[in-house]
Image (cartoon, rainbow, N blue to C red; front, side, top):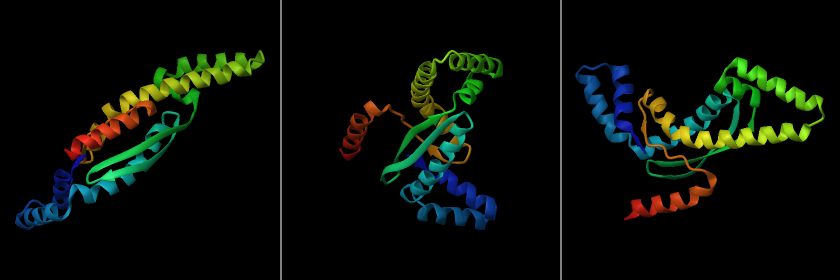
Length: 173
């Protein structure tokens, strides 16, 4: 859910100023631009910005809008790959990443390729759990910096359907 009022006022005020004409234009723009009209644009921007932000941390994702009702937008974020070294460097620092790299090289040198895959699988699970936990916490302030007020609820795959149907039932009452 988002509040388009502040975003509209900011954009119009930035272009026309805060004088009488700027204020009049902002009032008119608020009547024309509703949350349900701006939601698809926000969703489109998020499908680009979320993967870019996560890729910088070593997490490769695919983001797809799955549902929209008025200002309610549901996005599916799927982790398609991780880059363990980049992720460890981002989360724990360069020194820890160097030790992690040495461990992976030792596994390869000893012919323990299955252990390398096992480590990657464990890291991917931990990334998924952390992403579900942190996305709802960190995304709203980032979007608020751009004048978009949102409420974010992130759920693990196993919990999504029940939450979604309960939420839809709640807004229909």
